[in-house]
Length: 81
Image (cartoon, rainbow, N blue to C red; front, top):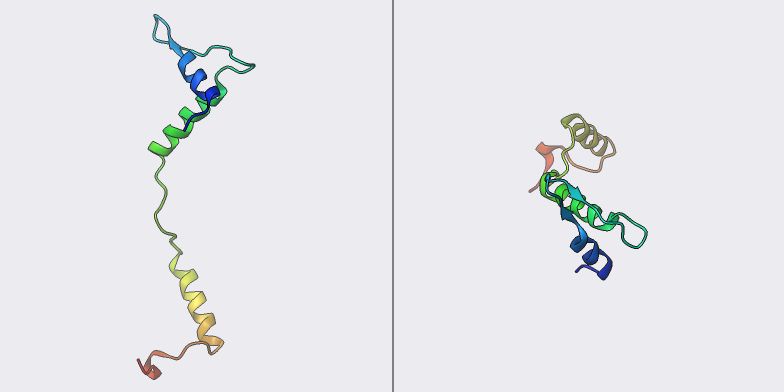
């Protein structure tokens, strides 16, 4: 939901005859909120973040070895399940 300030800033943005974007000076800012909204939308649309964390194999092996060394897990041949 947009507040009145962002809505009025979005409505005041115009495109001139040469195709340039003109940002009007409203309430002490040159449509800062609407530009921030546009940048956030572009970033949301274009930036792809990984869906899960990926640890390098050497970190996984080191963590597993620490658990085995502390006696917190049985060696595979001694497991009952």
